[in-house]
Amino acid sequence: MRVGVVQFPGSCDERDAAYALQVVGAEPVLLWHGAADLAGVEAVVLPGGFSYGDYLRTGALARFAPVMGALAAFAQRGGPVLGICNGFQILCEAGLLPGALTRNAGLRFVARPQPVRVAARSTWTAGLEPGDVLTIPVKHGEGRYVHDDPGQLAAGGQVLLRYCEPDGTVTRAANPNGSVAAIAGVTNPAGNVAGLMPHPEHAVDALLGSTDGRRLLGAVLSSVAAGRGGPVAAHL
Amino acid sequence: MPRVSIDVMLRDEILDPQGQAVERALPSLGFTGVAGVRIGKHIELTLAGDGTDVRATVEAMAATLLANPVIERFDWRVED
Image: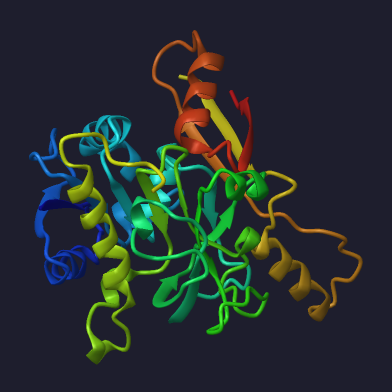
């Protein structure tokens, strides 16, 4: 399956994302931010980094990149889109995901392996069960997720991951950035667009500490494969 | 060529850790009696043209790009 990875000026994780997609059996296709179309890919990843220098607000300028028009239309049709870190910030700025990401409550850039617990069944967590704990690195300065009504998001199955302790308990100490309701990742109401602060693409080799990222990145491949010929199943 | 000032602030209910850090630093420099600090952005821009539709132009720019209405509010004024 061909999966696009969009490269903005200032992206820095696109090669890791492409490598990780290869590890889980996909064929990565680098897409330029100035492109008018998505080259026929079946899913799209917006990688981490500092698109357009993150000037004004993180993701605020990338939202207006030419490729974003094609991406919004693809998302509208039910195409699977995953934003990681800066990609998550861009999807929120573009209004494709609810809420916003703001400066970490502790003001520090946080980089550490982070246990997260799966909070919903979705296209993005196929093969995982709510309550499963994955260890995936975080590395961000502006990852504090803000939303007016996190309870409503959770009720709608839109909360994908929460920061937790290694045993799965959600505690204040385990929350690296002060995100509301410990939210580490969300989806749109239809479930085909997702955003995460943790970096699954940095967790695909045992040598680097964790292979849990394969389970997340692999999930969308099996979902898309299962949904071929029809729309991608929203919440499985 | 009207010159416009736009102030963008985090909405009151959104935590401002930058403001809190400054608020905590002030007493250690001897500035006691500060009850709250909020930090925002000040943007100045000059509009080409004679200044018709300034309101519509500025509010559209602020709502689309300069501020994110999910977390921020904005005020603006014409300077001259």
